[in-house]
Length: 295
Ligand code: FAD
Ligand code: FES
Ligand code: MG
Image (cartoon, rainbow, N blue to C red; front, side):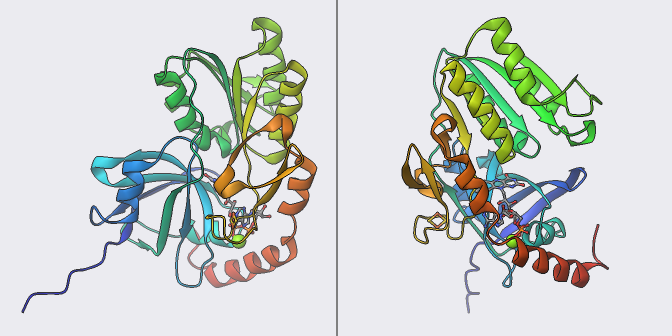
């Protein structure tokens, strides 16, 4: 009797804590038909996955930080902020990830031969890694600005060195690079070298809002990756509605990148907070359940 064919599984191959509360995880498929294999062959810069750790978990969106088709591998970098990211952080090499869907969203519009500015803040640094790489290899003049609260949170900086013509590091407390926010660096760069043809900024919502105000003043397009709460990630639930240029879009299928100059940031900030109480309760219970397992 022949043994039944096993369905493909998505397995954690590596998971490393790279900074306080920030994890670098690679998921691989057990066969070419698996989701990680499919994503690794098709993903482009700017796209994301929806991931679910286990039966009881919710799906959450994470940006695809890197792919390797030969290894059927997808690299995700996430910060623990609540229940689902905490559960992901407890996974170990060899553990199964229940669902991984993608690549989702529209890829970044990769220009050629332009003067571009790429800004990453906090865990948003991971999201701009593939964007900076694609822009560099497409022959653009790439300036990268990375910012974090403090030195330990300034992740992946060595990975940007080969894909940036200029790399500016900033920390709020001055523990590495220049002291101050990415917006200070952005203002100085523009004052010294003139406006950019196009830019990207990915990070905390308030950072993207402030960078967009500078881009608006200087009149150059700035792509920002919007992060409303997503449920299905496929345009079906309407949960990720955003207002851009007074029009309504679904960030999961129409974005996640939109020109920050046109985004209604206050509406986004408000919508992100709508489940704060439930999220806090859920995290409290989750930590109680897992206190013996926390790493
Ligand atoms: P919760 O306690 O449930 O939520 C904490 C906060 O996270 C909420 O207040 C809300 O603002 C946000 N959030 C909660 N649920 C969702 C959801 N379903 N969708 C979106 N935001 C949510 N984070 C990373 O660390 N790395 C990434 O690469 C990354 N990429 C993203 C790409 C996209 C397109 C989007 C929309 C978000 C991305 N995020 C990323 C944010 C990440 O999805 C949230 O931090 C995560 O869903 C929080 O889940 P939680 O259960 O741990 O926390
Ligand atoms: Fe449901 Fe975008 S997450 S429509
Ligand atoms: Mg949650």
